[in-house]
Amino acid sequence: MSEASNGIVARAMRRLRAEPMWCAMALLSALCVMLAVINVALSLGNDGNRRFLAERQAVLAQAATFGRVNQSIVSALAQFAVRDHDEDMRALLASQGITASATPAPAAPK
Image 1 (cartoon, rainbow, N blue to C red):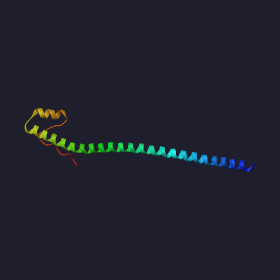
Image 2: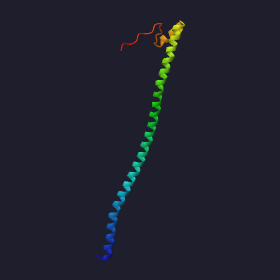
Image 3: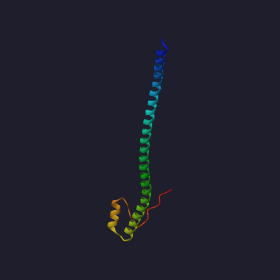
Image 4: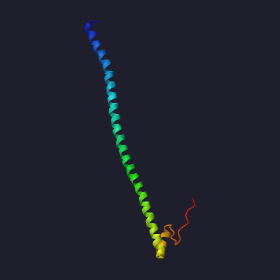
């Protein structure tokens, strides 16, 4: 073989060696881009879930406050029904499962 053909063969061999590296680098780059897109999508989903959970937590915190307020309102209505002998109010409370009596209920044993 002549030197010219040796040069052509050498260049071809270099290209063959270089192309698999370029192909591997392109595949790795595409994989990195896909992973970055997946990461962004997952983080956006996490933000939505975090906001939803924060809203639910606020509702639960308010529910405890509303429960105490509701208990106070029902207790006051029962006291007024007993004090004023209001049978309609007693019937309304009884329809909701609340009994209003003149004597306080005995305390639960501890």
